[in-house]
Length: 347
Ligand SMILES: NC(=O)c1ccc[n+]([C@@H]2O[C@H](COP(=O)([O-])OP(=O)(O)OC[C@H]3O[C@@H](n4cnc5c(N)ncnc54)[C@H](OP(=O)(O)O)[C@@H]3O)[C@@H](O)[C@H]2O)c1
Image 1 (cartoon, rainbow, N blue to C red):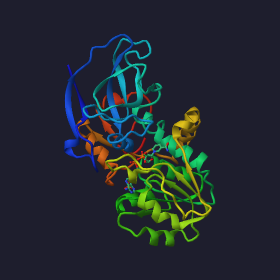
Image 2: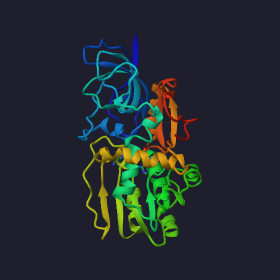
Image 3: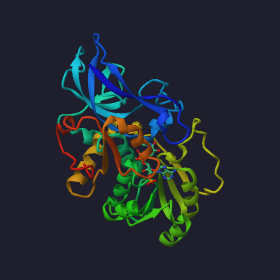
Protein backbone atom coordinates (compact mmCIF):
# COMPACT_ATOMS: atom_id res chain seq x y z
CA UNK A 1 0.00 0.00 0.00
CA UNK A 2 1.21 3.53 -0.85
CA UNK A 3 0.85 6.83 1.00
CA UNK A 4 1.24 10.30 -0.47
CA UNK A 5 3.52 13.02 0.90
CA UNK A 6 4.45 16.55 -0.13
CA UNK A 7 8.23 16.82 -0.06
CA UNK A 8 10.50 19.84 -0.33
CA UNK A 9 12.13 19.79 -3.78
CA UNK A 10 13.86 23.19 -3.69
CA UNK A 11 14.38 26.14 -1.36
CA UNK A 12 11.69 28.80 -1.94
CA UNK A 13 12.75 32.39 -2.47
CA UNK A 14 9.34 34.05 -2.02
CA UNK A 15 6.01 32.20 -2.12
CA UNK A 16 6.29 28.43 -2.70
CA UNK A 17 6.71 27.86 -6.43
CA UNK A 18 5.58 24.69 -8.21
CA UNK A 19 9.18 23.46 -8.44
CA UNK A 20 9.73 23.88 -4.67
CA UNK A 21 7.51 20.93 -3.70
CA UNK A 22 6.59 17.53 -5.13
CA UNK A 23 3.74 15.11 -4.42
CA UNK A 24 5.24 11.61 -4.05
CA UNK A 25 3.92 8.10 -3.36
CA UNK A 26 5.87 5.97 -0.90
CA UNK A 27 5.26 2.43 0.39
CA UNK A 28 3.92 2.39 3.94
CA UNK A 29 6.70 1.60 6.43
CA UNK A 30 6.94 -1.72 8.28
CA UNK A 31 6.61 -1.01 12.00
CA UNK A 32 9.18 -2.10 14.57
CA UNK A 33 8.56 -2.37 18.33
CA UNK A 34 7.73 0.99 19.90
CA UNK A 35 6.31 2.45 16.68
CA UNK A 36 2.78 3.16 15.48
CA UNK A 37 1.38 4.28 12.13
CA UNK A 38 -0.80 7.40 12.07
CA UNK A 39 -3.20 8.29 9.27
CA UNK A 40 -3.29 12.07 8.96
CA UNK A 41 -6.71 13.71 8.85
CA UNK A 42 -5.95 17.44 8.94
CA UNK A 43 -2.96 19.71 8.46
CA UNK A 44 -3.15 23.24 9.86
CA UNK A 45 -1.18 25.76 7.84
CA UNK A 46 1.44 27.65 9.84
CA UNK A 47 3.65 30.49 8.62
CA UNK A 48 6.58 28.78 10.36
CA UNK A 49 6.54 26.02 7.69
CA UNK A 50 7.65 28.61 5.13
CA UNK A 51 10.47 29.71 7.47
CA UNK A 52 11.84 26.24 8.20
CA UNK A 53 11.78 25.45 4.45
CA UNK A 54 14.76 27.79 4.17
CA UNK A 55 16.26 28.35 7.62
CA UNK A 56 17.23 26.84 10.96
CA UNK A 57 15.39 28.85 13.60
CA UNK A 58 16.43 26.67 16.51
CA UNK A 59 13.15 25.59 18.05
CA UNK A 60 11.85 23.82 14.90
CA UNK A 61 14.44 21.93 12.82
CA UNK A 62 14.75 22.99 9.17
CA UNK A 63 13.17 20.83 6.46
CA UNK A 64 15.68 18.85 4.41
CA UNK A 65 15.39 18.71 0.63
CA UNK A 66 13.59 15.47 -0.27
CA UNK A 67 11.79 15.26 3.10
CA UNK A 68 8.12 16.07 3.78
CA UNK A 69 7.15 19.58 4.78
CA UNK A 70 5.83 19.88 8.33
CA UNK A 71 3.20 21.81 10.22
CA UNK A 72 0.66 21.26 12.97
CA UNK A 73 -1.89 18.59 12.23
CA UNK A 74 -3.92 15.70 13.60
CA UNK A 75 -4.62 12.06 12.82
CA UNK A 76 -5.47 8.60 14.13
CA UNK A 77 -3.26 5.61 14.89
CA UNK A 78 -4.24 2.84 12.46
CA UNK A 79 -1.55 0.21 13.29
CA UNK A 80 0.51 -0.10 16.42
CA UNK A 81 3.45 -1.90 17.99
CA UNK A 82 3.53 0.63 20.84
CA UNK A 83 1.77 0.57 24.23
CA UNK A 84 1.93 4.35 24.33
CA UNK A 85 0.18 4.88 20.96
CA UNK A 86 -2.58 2.22 20.65
CA UNK A 87 -4.72 1.77 17.53
CA UNK A 88 -7.58 4.28 17.47
CA UNK A 89 -5.73 6.93 19.53
CA UNK A 90 -6.10 10.43 18.04
CA UNK A 91 -3.09 12.73 18.16
CA UNK A 92 -2.19 16.30 17.31
CA UNK A 93 1.20 17.90 16.97
CA UNK A 94 3.91 19.08 14.60
CA UNK A 95 3.78 16.43 11.87
CA UNK A 96 4.77 15.61 8.29
CA UNK A 97 2.71 16.54 5.25
CA UNK A 98 2.11 12.81 4.68
CA UNK A 99 -1.03 10.72 4.57
CA UNK A 100 0.65 8.13 6.81
CA UNK A 101 3.55 8.60 9.21
CA UNK A 102 5.47 6.74 11.87
CA UNK A 103 4.80 7.89 15.43
CA UNK A 104 7.22 6.98 18.22
CA UNK A 105 8.60 8.34 21.48
CA UNK A 106 10.44 11.13 19.62
CA UNK A 107 7.33 12.44 17.83
CA UNK A 108 6.10 15.91 18.81
CA UNK A 109 2.51 14.79 19.34
CA UNK A 110 0.00 14.60 22.15
CA UNK A 111 -3.27 12.67 22.54
CA UNK A 112 -6.52 14.50 21.74
CA UNK A 113 -9.07 14.08 24.56
CA UNK A 114 -12.17 12.10 23.59
CA UNK A 115 -14.55 15.09 23.76
CA UNK A 116 -12.37 17.26 21.51
CA UNK A 117 -12.77 17.19 17.71
CA UNK A 118 -9.83 17.42 15.34
CA UNK A 119 -10.90 20.97 14.39
CA UNK A 120 -11.01 22.00 18.05
CA UNK A 121 -7.60 20.45 18.69
CA UNK A 122 -6.22 22.69 15.92
CA UNK A 123 -8.12 25.84 16.90
CA UNK A 124 -9.39 26.28 20.47
CA UNK A 125 -6.70 24.01 21.98
CA UNK A 126 -3.70 24.81 19.83
CA UNK A 127 -0.79 27.22 20.07
CA UNK A 128 -2.47 29.88 17.90
CA UNK A 129 -5.44 30.31 20.26
CA UNK A 130 -3.05 30.07 23.22
CA UNK A 131 -0.84 32.81 21.71
CA UNK A 132 -3.95 34.96 21.31
CA UNK A 133 -5.11 34.36 24.89
CA UNK A 134 -1.81 34.70 26.74
CA UNK A 135 -0.48 37.38 24.41
CA UNK A 136 -3.51 39.59 24.84
CA UNK A 137 -4.42 38.85 28.49
CA UNK A 138 -1.19 38.03 30.31
CA UNK A 139 1.54 39.68 28.22
CA UNK A 140 -0.43 42.64 26.87
CA UNK A 141 -2.65 42.93 29.99
CA UNK A 142 -5.32 44.62 27.88
CA UNK A 143 -7.68 47.00 29.72
CA UNK A 144 -11.22 48.12 28.97
CA UNK A 145 -10.26 51.80 28.61
CA UNK A 146 -7.68 51.11 25.89
CA UNK A 147 -7.48 51.28 22.11
CA UNK A 148 -5.94 48.11 20.68
CA UNK A 149 -4.66 47.46 17.16
CA UNK A 150 -4.07 43.87 16.00
CA UNK A 151 -2.04 43.41 12.81
CA UNK A 152 -2.84 40.27 10.81
CA UNK A 153 -6.16 40.36 12.62
CA UNK A 154 -7.88 38.04 10.15
CA UNK A 155 -5.24 35.33 10.72
CA UNK A 156 -5.36 32.37 13.10
CA UNK A 157 -3.86 34.23 16.09
CA UNK A 158 -5.13 37.69 15.18
CA UNK A 159 -8.79 36.72 14.74
CA UNK A 160 -8.90 35.25 18.25
CA UNK A 161 -6.71 37.94 19.86
CA UNK A 162 -8.95 40.68 18.42
CA UNK A 163 -12.09 39.08 19.82
CA UNK A 164 -10.47 38.60 23.25
CA UNK A 165 -9.56 42.30 23.37
CA UNK A 166 -13.17 43.10 22.48
CA UNK A 167 -14.46 40.75 25.20
CA UNK A 168 -12.18 42.57 27.67
CA UNK A 169 -14.03 45.76 26.75
CA UNK A 170 -11.30 47.49 24.74
CA UNK A 171 -11.85 49.43 21.52
CA UNK A 172 -10.29 47.15 18.91
CA UNK A 173 -9.12 47.63 15.36
CA UNK A 174 -7.33 45.34 12.98
CA UNK A 175 -5.45 45.24 9.70
CA UNK A 176 -6.17 42.84 6.84
CA UNK A 177 -5.94 42.50 3.06
CA UNK A 178 -8.85 43.85 1.06
CA UNK A 179 -12.23 45.42 1.76
CA UNK A 180 -14.09 42.12 1.99
CA UNK A 181 -11.87 40.77 4.77
CA UNK A 182 -12.04 44.12 6.59
CA UNK A 183 -15.84 44.01 6.38
CA UNK A 184 -15.75 40.50 7.83
CA UNK A 185 -13.61 41.72 10.76
CA UNK A 186 -16.12 44.38 11.75
CA UNK A 187 -19.35 42.50 10.94
CA UNK A 188 -18.51 38.92 11.98
CA UNK A 189 -15.81 39.41 14.62
CA UNK A 190 -17.21 42.67 16.04
CA UNK A 191 -14.09 44.82 15.65
CA UNK A 192 -14.62 48.57 15.95
CA UNK A 193 -12.60 49.33 12.84
CA UNK A 194 -10.49 47.56 10.23
CA UNK A 195 -7.83 48.95 7.90
CA UNK A 196 -7.14 47.45 4.49
CA UNK A 197 -3.37 47.97 4.72
CA UNK A 198 -2.81 46.94 1.10
CA UNK A 199 -5.15 49.56 -0.40
CA UNK A 200 -5.71 52.23 2.26
CA UNK A 201 -3.27 54.78 3.60
CA UNK A 202 -2.53 53.30 7.05
CA UNK A 203 -1.21 56.58 8.51
CA UNK A 204 -4.29 58.58 7.42
CA UNK A 205 -6.62 55.88 8.71
CA UNK A 206 -4.90 55.69 12.11
CA UNK A 207 -4.78 59.45 12.59
CA UNK A 208 -8.53 59.60 11.92
CA UNK A 209 -9.53 56.45 13.85
CA UNK A 210 -7.16 56.72 16.84
CA UNK A 211 -6.87 60.44 17.67
CA UNK A 212 -5.61 59.63 21.19
CA UNK A 213 -3.19 56.98 20.00
CA UNK A 214 -3.01 53.20 20.24
CA UNK A 215 -2.35 51.88 23.74
CA UNK A 216 -1.63 48.28 22.78
CA UNK A 217 -0.30 47.00 19.45
CA UNK A 218 -0.65 43.21 19.14
CA UNK A 219 1.71 42.66 16.23
CA UNK A 220 1.63 39.46 14.16
CA UNK A 221 3.50 40.77 11.11
CA UNK A 222 6.25 43.31 11.89
CA UNK A 223 7.90 44.84 8.80
CA UNK A 224 6.73 47.98 7.08
CA UNK A 225 3.27 47.75 8.59
CA UNK A 226 4.78 47.99 12.08
CA UNK A 227 6.79 50.99 10.90
CA UNK A 228 3.58 52.67 9.76
CA UNK A 229 1.81 52.05 13.09
CA UNK A 230 4.58 53.08 15.53
CA UNK A 231 4.04 56.87 15.08
CA UNK A 232 0.42 56.41 16.22
CA UNK A 233 1.22 54.65 19.50
CA UNK A 234 0.15 56.53 22.64
CA UNK A 235 2.75 57.51 25.26
CA UNK A 236 3.78 54.43 27.29
CA UNK A 237 2.02 52.09 24.86
CA UNK A 238 2.92 48.38 24.73
CA UNK A 239 3.81 46.37 21.62
CA UNK A 240 3.09 42.67 22.06
CA UNK A 241 5.42 41.19 19.47
CA UNK A 242 3.67 37.92 18.64
CA UNK A 243 4.99 37.22 15.15
CA UNK A 244 6.72 38.62 12.13
CA UNK A 245 4.99 37.14 9.07
CA UNK A 246 6.08 40.09 6.91
CA UNK A 247 9.68 38.85 7.22
CA UNK A 248 8.95 35.23 6.34
CA UNK A 249 9.03 35.30 2.51
CA UNK A 250 12.81 35.45 2.22
CA UNK A 251 15.44 32.94 1.11
CA UNK A 252 17.71 33.64 4.08
CA UNK A 253 17.36 33.12 7.84
CA UNK A 254 15.58 35.84 9.77
CA UNK A 255 17.82 38.72 10.74
CA UNK A 256 18.08 39.93 14.34
CA UNK A 257 16.06 42.73 15.88
CA UNK A 258 16.58 46.08 14.23
CA UNK A 259 17.45 48.90 16.59
CA UNK A 260 14.59 51.41 16.94
CA UNK A 261 15.14 54.95 18.13
CA UNK A 262 11.53 56.02 17.72
CA UNK A 263 9.93 54.12 20.59
CA UNK A 264 10.40 56.54 23.49
CA UNK A 265 8.75 55.01 26.58
CA UNK A 266 7.05 52.25 24.62
CA UNK A 267 7.61 48.66 25.82
CA UNK A 268 8.15 45.82 23.38
CA UNK A 269 7.03 42.52 24.87
CA UNK A 270 7.85 39.25 23.13
CA UNK A 271 6.63 35.84 24.22
CA UNK A 272 6.29 32.21 23.19
CA UNK A 273 2.88 30.69 23.82
CA UNK A 274 4.52 27.33 24.62
CA UNK A 275 6.05 28.88 27.75
CA UNK A 276 2.48 28.97 29.10
CA UNK A 277 1.91 25.25 28.41
CA UNK A 278 1.09 24.43 32.04
CA UNK A 279 -1.69 27.04 31.96
CA UNK A 280 -3.31 25.93 28.67
CA UNK A 281 -6.27 24.25 30.49
CA UNK A 282 -7.14 27.59 32.15
CA UNK A 283 -7.10 29.37 28.78
CA UNK A 284 -9.09 26.62 27.03
CA UNK A 285 -11.71 26.72 29.81
CA UNK A 286 -12.08 30.51 29.55
CA UNK A 287 -12.30 30.45 25.75
CA UNK A 288 -14.79 27.54 25.80
CA UNK A 289 -17.02 29.55 28.12
CA UNK A 290 -16.88 32.60 25.84
CA UNK A 291 -17.66 30.37 22.87
CA UNK A 292 -20.64 28.80 24.66
CA UNK A 293 -21.88 32.32 25.46
CA UNK A 294 -21.65 33.23 21.75
CA UNK A 295 -18.93 35.84 22.36
CA UNK A 296 -15.99 34.07 20.70
CA UNK A 297 -15.68 32.11 17.49
CA UNK A 298 -12.69 30.26 16.10
CA UNK A 299 -12.85 31.11 12.42
CA UNK A 300 -11.31 28.60 10.09
CA UNK A 301 -11.17 27.97 6.40
CA UNK A 302 -10.97 24.53 4.78
CA UNK A 303 -8.98 23.42 1.75
CA UNK A 304 -9.51 19.84 0.58
CA UNK A 305 -6.78 17.34 -0.27
CA UNK A 306 -3.08 17.08 0.49
CA UNK A 307 -2.09 18.10 -3.05
CA UNK A 308 -3.40 21.62 -2.38
CA UNK A 309 -1.35 22.12 0.81
CA UNK A 310 1.45 24.10 -0.90
CA UNK A 311 -1.03 26.59 -2.34
CA UNK A 312 -2.75 26.72 1.06
CA UNK A 313 0.56 27.70 2.68
CA UNK A 314 0.89 30.53 0.16
CA UNK A 315 -2.60 31.73 1.12
CA UNK A 316 -1.19 32.82 4.51
CA UNK A 317 1.02 35.36 2.76
CA UNK A 318 -0.96 36.64 -0.21
CA UNK A 319 -4.09 37.76 1.62
CA UNK A 320 -6.38 34.81 0.78
CA UNK A 321 -6.57 33.10 4.20
CA UNK A 322 -9.11 33.81 6.91
CA UNK A 323 -8.74 32.43 10.45
CA UNK A 324 -7.04 29.05 10.91
CA UNK A 325 -6.41 27.45 7.53
CA UNK A 326 -7.01 23.68 7.59
CA UNK A 327 -6.17 21.20 4.85
CA UNK A 328 -8.45 18.16 5.10
CA UNK A 329 -6.93 14.85 4.09
CA UNK A 330 -9.69 12.69 5.47
CA UNK A 331 -13.03 14.37 6.17
CA UNK A 332 -14.67 11.26 7.66
CA UNK A 333 -12.25 10.91 10.55
CA UNK A 334 -12.44 14.60 11.43
CA UNK A 335 -15.98 14.01 12.61
CA UNK A 336 -14.85 12.16 15.76
CA UNK A 337 -15.85 13.80 19.06
CA UNK A 338 -17.00 17.24 20.24
CA UNK A 339 -18.18 20.27 18.29
CA UNK A 340 -18.15 20.14 14.53
CA UNK A 341 -17.52 22.94 12.11
CA UNK A 342 -20.22 23.44 9.52
CA UNK A 343 -18.34 24.70 6.51
CA UNK A 344 -15.10 26.23 7.61
CA UNK A 345 -16.70 29.26 9.21
CA UNK A 346 -16.44 28.61 12.90
CA UNK A 347 -15.60 26.04 15.52
N1 LIG B 1 4.50 34.11 19.89
C1 LIG B 1 3.93 32.90 19.75
O1 LIG B 1 3.91 32.08 20.64
C2 LIG B 1 3.27 32.58 18.43
C3 LIG B 1 2.36 31.51 18.34
C4 LIG B 1 1.75 31.28 17.11
C5 LIG B 1 2.07 32.07 16.01
N2 LIG B 1 3.01 33.05 16.14
C6 LIG B 1 3.34 33.93 15.03
O2 LIG B 1 2.28 34.86 14.92
C7 LIG B 1 2.10 35.24 13.57
C8 LIG B 1 0.66 34.98 13.15
O3 LIG B 1 0.44 33.56 13.17
P1 LIG B 1 -0.88 32.98 12.51
O4 LIG B 1 -0.86 31.52 12.75
O5 LIG B 1 -2.05 33.80 12.95
O6 LIG B 1 -0.60 33.28 10.96
P2 LIG B 1 -1.66 33.58 9.82
O7 LIG B 1 -2.91 32.82 10.04
O8 LIG B 1 -0.89 33.41 8.57
O9 LIG B 1 -1.99 35.12 10.05
C9 LIG B 1 -1.09 36.13 9.79
C10 LIG B 1 -1.76 37.20 8.93
O10 LIG B 1 -0.76 38.15 8.60
C11 LIG B 1 -1.12 38.78 7.39
N3 LIG B 1 0.10 39.01 6.63
C12 LIG B 1 0.87 38.11 5.98
N4 LIG B 1 1.93 38.72 5.40
C13 LIG B 1 1.81 40.04 5.70
C14 LIG B 1 2.58 41.21 5.39
N5 LIG B 1 3.68 41.14 4.63
N6 LIG B 1 2.17 42.40 5.89
C15 LIG B 1 1.06 42.49 6.64
N7 LIG B 1 0.26 41.43 6.94
C16 LIG B 1 0.65 40.23 6.48
C17 LIG B 1 -2.03 37.80 6.62
O11 LIG B 1 -3.31 38.31 6.25
P3 LIG B 1 -3.68 39.78 5.75
O12 LIG B 1 -2.69 40.11 4.66
O13 LIG B 1 -5.08 39.70 5.27
O14 LIG B 1 -3.55 40.65 6.96
C18 LIG B 1 -2.31 36.67 7.61
O15 LIG B 1 -3.67 36.40 7.80
C19 LIG B 1 3.11 34.44 12.75
O16 LIG B 1 4.23 35.26 12.50
C20 LIG B 1 3.46 33.28 13.65
O17 LIG B 1 4.74 32.78 13.39
C21 LIG B 1 3.59 33.33 17.32
